[in-house]
Length: 274
Image (cartoon, rainbow, N blue to C red; front, side):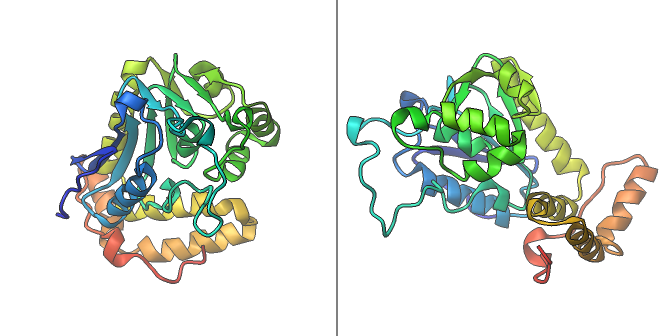
C-alpha cells in the first residue's frame, strides 16, 4: 500500500476502502491558504492511483467546512496576480478527475472557494444550519474553481446566475431546494452519512464500473445522444466479459459481498472516446 502522506493543511486517512480528506486549518475555519490547493490536488492524485481507495470523502475540521480564501492579508488578498502562474482553478487536479466517487461531507460553512470546491465533487451532503454562497462578487472579484461550468449544470442557468451574480448566502435547506446537494442533515450527522455512502460503494460497487460511469457522467455534458451511446458502448466493451462482471452476478445470487479484482490504476483503457 502506498505510504500515507503528511500534510500541513489536511488530514488524510484510508480505512475500509474509503479515503477521508479533512481540510484542517481550524484556527482559520479551514480557509483556503498555506498551500492547501497543492496539498489537496496531491491527495486527490494519491486517491486516484491507489486501488485500495474505492471512494473518497472530503470534509472539514469543525466547526466549518471551508470559509473560502484566507483573508489574512486584508485588502491585498486579491492583489494583482502573476499572469505567468496564476490560475483561477485553485487546484491542479479537481475532484472530477479522481476515478473514484468523491463525496463532499459539508459539515459546516462553505463560502466562496470553499463552496465552489464542493461543486467539483460527485455527491454533496450539506449541513442544515451552515451558510453557503459564492460571495466573490461582493469582494470585488468573481466565482472561481470552474464554478461557471459546474454550477449551471447542477442547478440550471437561472439559479446559477442568481448565486454567482448576487453573491448572496443561504442555508442548507435552501441549497437542497435549489438542487445543490442530494441530502441536507443536522451538522453532526453529515460526515457519518457520507461515510456510510462511501463504505457502501467501497464494498458493493465494482471499481472499474464506478470509474467509467463517473468519467461519462462528467463528459456527457459535452456530448449529444449519439456520443453518449458510443461512449457507453466502448465502456461496456471494457467491463463485459471481465472477472468482475461475473463476480457481481455471482455475489448477488449467492447473497454475499463481492470480491472485486479489477485495478483501475493498472487496467484503465487508453482509447476511451471521452
